[in-house]
Image (cartoon, rainbow, N blue to C red; front, side):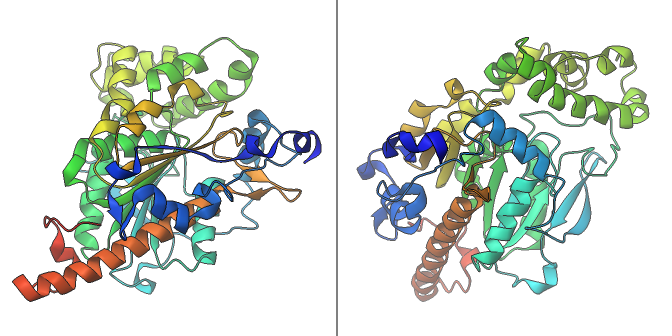
Amino acid sequence: MGLLSLLPRSRFRVRLTHAATEKQPQIDKRAFSEYIREKCPTLADPDKAFYFPSWLLPHGDMQTIYLYTQHYKPAGCPVDYERQIFEFSDGGKAAMDWAFPRKSVAPDAPLIILIPGIAGTSFDYYARSFIHSIIQDNCACQVVVVHSRGCNGVDLKTPKAFHGGMTSDLREFVKYVSKETPNAPLFGLGFSLGANILTKYIGEESSSCKFFAAASVCNPYDIDKTVEEMCRPTLKNRYLYAAALTRSLVSLFADNEKVIMAGNADLDPARIMESRNINEFNEAYTAKVFGYSSVKELNSSGSCVHRIKDIRIPMLFLNALDDPMCCQETVPYNEIENNPNLILAYTRYGGHLAFFEGMMLSAWLPRQLSSFVRAMVESQQKTCQQGDAMSAKSVGINSCKDLDGLDVAM
C-alpha cells in the first residue's frame, strides 16, 4: 500500500449512516442494518468492512481517470448483450441491453434494472464488472441496462434527449418490464447521474414503487451544487471532468442536430456547440427543450435529495468522500438517517465509480454490490415463500406476484 500503509487502519473502514435499529424495517427477524451486516460483512461489518485503495491509485482523481481507461478494455469481464430497441409513448427510442439471453433465465428470476451515468452505456466498466460479479457469485438474476435517449448507438427520434432528473423514461421502462416479466421481482441499480434518476423515481413512486430493493452508487444528490462545483474554472474541470461531460453532450447534439432543430427553431446551434461547461449546454439546450425557466430550476427540480424522505423500500447508498465529480458536501447524511429504509455506506477513498484495490487493480465495488443484491434477493424470496403459504390458506393466492398490495412484512 506504499505510504497508505503508514495510516491507521480505521481510516480505511467503511462507515455507515442509518436510522436507529428500533426504527428500521425487519428483514428476516432483524433490523435492516443488522441483516446487511451479517449478509454483507465486507460492506457493513465494522470488523471486516474496509476499502484499501491501491497504492498505485492513492486518491480519487487517479482512481477516476484509470476507470475511464477501462471502458475500452473488455478483457477480464466481457459481457455479451442482447439488444432491444424500446419505443416510448412519445415516439422516442432508446436501447435496452439484456445481459443474458432472456429465454435462458427463469421467468421468475429477479430482474436488475441498471441505469448508467450521464450518457453512459452497457459497455462502461462499472456496468460490465458488476454483471461479471453477479455471474461469479452465482446469483440467478437477469440484468437489463436501460439507456438514455441518443446514447449507445441509438439516434434521437424526438427533439428531447434527457436530463439529470428525468424519471418519465425510467417509469416507462419499469412499466414495460413489469408487463413483460410479470413474475420477476425488480431490483434497481443506478450509477452516478443514473443513481440520481433512480432515487428520484423511487421517491416519487413512494409506496407504489415496483422495486423490492435498490442501490445507488456515487449519487450526486444535489445536481445544482454538483454542477456549480464542476463549473468552477479549475484546471481539472477545464481539461478533465466537466470538459469530458460537456463534450459528450455537445457530441450528442451534433449527431442529432437535424432532429433537435426540427422541433426547436428558437435554439441557437452555434451557441450549443460552443458550450464550455454543463451549465452553458443546459442553458442553451436542455432547459429550453424541457420547458424550464432557468438552469437553476432545471437542476434544483431534478435533484433526488428532495425525494429521499419518500422512499419506502430498502435501499443502499454508496459514496466515496474523495469523489472528484460528486462533492462530499452534497451527501445527505441527515435525510438518510431520518428514513429507516435507507443505509449509507461511505469510504474515504475510491474516486467516482472506481474503487480499485491491490497491485492488480481489482475492482472492490462490484463485489459489494453483488453481495447486497444477493442478500436482498434471499430476503425477498423468503418473504414470498412465507407470504405464499400464509395467503394461500386464507385467500387462495398461488404466486408471490399476487401479493402486490398486501401488507406482508419483510
